[in-house]
Image 1 (spheres, rainbow, N blue to C red):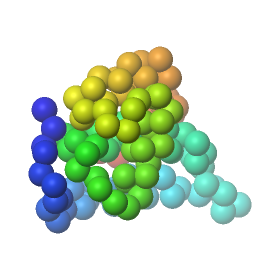
Image 2: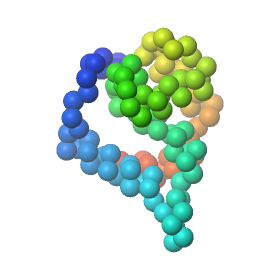
Image 3: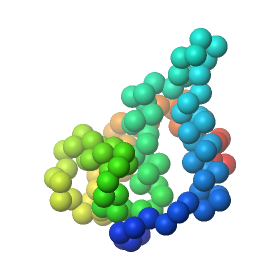
Image 4: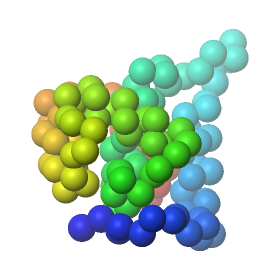
Length: 113
């Protein structure tokens, strides 16, 4: 189910376009220069986006994505050595119980379609 490559390839043109759209959405500001989307909501939805890429959490061996997924793993109370498959199953259960902000999720869906 997950790609198990230990090194991530560079982003394709399509992947870069997707990334740019998502980042623009997360960085939206109101007329006062305040971010529209709460950091807590963004951090809550990011693991879903990352896991939806089909790349297992174990592939991210360093950097901010590894930290974010480790934080999410701890929030789900999973052990450090959880398998990618068990991580994904737990994430699905977690998001069913604690869904992302509906407005942010709706805007994400618009941005990526």
